[in-house]
Length: 116
Length: 113
Image (cartoon, rainbow over all chains, first blue to last red; front, side):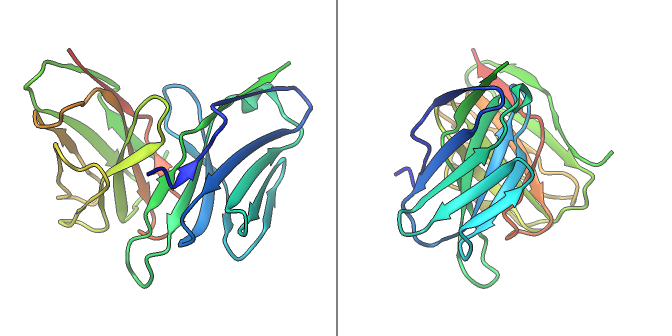
């Protein structure tokens, strides 16, 4: 049962335009959402996150939007640059409460290609 | 330079052999994790550890074993009981168990011949 889904395996965008990567989730107990970026043969690196009590978080060219009613989050990259070409994973943390472990569940990833 | 070091980067194994993947971190992080990545799938959690001498099974622990004898080290053994071990393995760490933000190593690609 895939609780975090990235339904677009790939996305191609022209340099300077906006990239929008989407992620859907099913579990309402997720309380924190993160985006990771991964280059080939490297480990993922943390990009940006958002708490479930917010609907937007911005960091430079990257903005994450959260729509709790739709159980949907998106990552906007503006303007897109060729160096942004990578695989992007969304992840959600399960709120186990107290000192219990908050497990991360990852989506399948979306390959973003930004053309010069 | 602080970070996570995984070795080897590439590993080939014959069926029936156990292999151990190394993971070392000098970030002074308490929590460490092992994930597996397969094509078209997200990262799946194998094992995690919150403190030395303690570790817990993740979603796909069958056929794997770990140890946490030192804070800096969290090796993963892929045993012959793992039915489909060919994959990309990622080690990660975090300051505490609940922060969500993970720091990943560069990964180890295991191929079973």
